[in-house]
Amino acid sequence: MSVGNLSGQTSVLAVDVYNKKIHLESGGNVKRSVGGLTKVATALVALDWSEATGVSLNTLASISPSVLQIAGINAIGLMPGDQVTLRDLIYASMMTSDNVASTALAAFIGQDILSRRGKSGDPITMFVSEMNKLAAREDMRHTRFTNPHGLENSRTMPYSTAADMARLSMYALSRAPFRFYTNQKSRVIRVLRSGQPYTVSLNNTNTLLGVGTIDGMKTGNSPRSGGCVIITEERPGTPLKQSDGQEAVFRHRMLIVVLGSSDPFSEARNLLQQGWNTYDQWLKVGRPVTDARELLAGF
Image 1 (tube, rainbow, N blue to C red):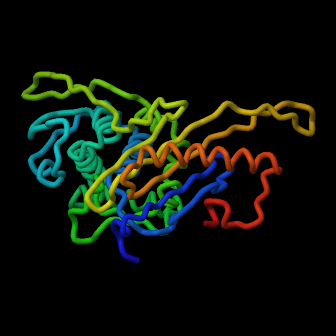
Image 2 (image 1 turned 90 degrees about the vertical axis):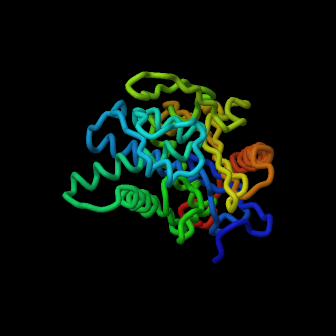
Image 3 (image 1 turned 90 degrees about the horizontal axis):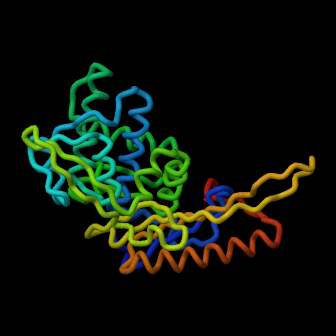
């Protein structure tokens, strides 16, 4: 299947996070570029690596000339020799979708993985292989990552689908540290340049953050992907009496994925409202699931 902007068509999906029930969907399994949404996988690989190795995210990484050449757009103005903590590189990757930050993150972690395994090779290629392992683990059957930033500047084009990005987002939501990087409207990070610190202010590109109770997650926009956004919102839980007489809380969270839109924020917000309306009707009739394809796992 071809990858790119599908004649202006948009791929969308609205799914309930806790029950995995798909409430709205159009083109959910269509392969296409997802631009900067790729960085969700980049951040998750970095967080999982830090947890597995015990390497602190306060560790400094250096910005090399090759990283700047590979990454292209340098949104926050990093220069060769600059040093930034891995933590702040994740913030820059997720909040401003900075390509240099995500590439520097991949280069540092990829080299560490190669060293631990006693291998030589390209560190970014190693990192991307970990991104694709994550995709396989999360059953992202129609996804191929080719770089850590999402630009279509490789001979082999990267691609994913709305359904696969929803699967990845489900895993991201299960990782409390990840959510801390995506739910802030602004943050100041520190860069060491020639040994001297200076600060950079980051503003989140997700303009829907904080509208209602929207608390994430990521935006993306590239020549092939068009406007993309993932948003998520949790509503107050509903107390329910169980058969043993005790009370449990039934939680409600909606996840929206929009790919290839000319107005992704408006479309995502409208889809969120539609998704909740469909969800409420589903609850009223007893939460029926008559076909496995109604659930994300079977879609």
